[in-house]
Image (cartoon, rainbow, N blue to C red; front, side, top):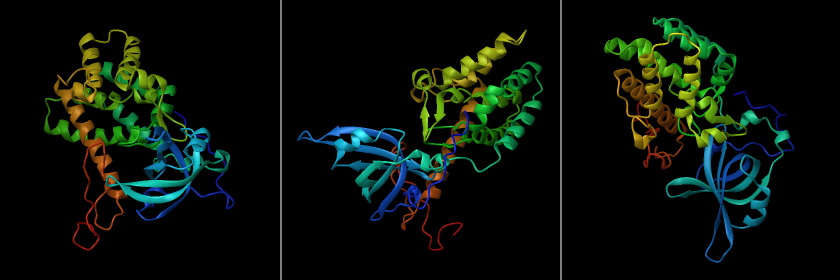
Length: 336
């Protein structure tokens, strides 16, 4: 995946981007955001209203428009930049913008990178760390497989930039690479503690578990799913990609092939979480647990960082059905 195009920055005569993370209940919202989602609903009297998910590089927020919804529905489409004016309120314990007016903004007047979260790190330098880890693999078949995949120009260019998710964890340009590097650090700790887990396989499971996301996700003015991502999904896409590379290696052992592909299809942990198979090898179990640890920790750390309320509690997080406590900034919380 390539970095989104970089149009001109906003000028003084154009509305400024809205910093979603800084919005608080009772505050006026006035700025430009990405329309990440738009849903049309009908009231009992037949009038329509619109629900939005709006975002920028700092986060996302829900919004609702009651008046003028018909005209806005015709003008505003998912993926547009839009100038939003309204007030921030609490709805079901989460922030929401009650929109007074929304109109399409000219994308040529803005730098799209202001609306797509991106890593601040040198992604090429980080990718070199990943390649050095591959070079440390002892098994020649696995070392060749990992090297062939991650030194492939098409894979490398997309893997460096792909997010690890659409909105929960590492959901930014370069997020997949940073997620994998974080897991590789944790993997070395785990295999040192549990030497029965074969390091060469665990390293491969970490490297390849989300490789299908380079085909599942795309960055436009926001992170979204590709058509094949919606229809097939990254577990199957990952197995297909890795299987093609394995087929090019003469004499690649059948059992090793099954073990590698099993780590990909089982890394979500169970059928109800999207894996067609539960982890059934020690290495697949380790990869699943490392993925869960790193993804959940990253997501919750971001929620805590973005919490601005005086009482220290985050908005309600619908995905996990709870609030998170940052702590009050009164000297009683650690690190204050």
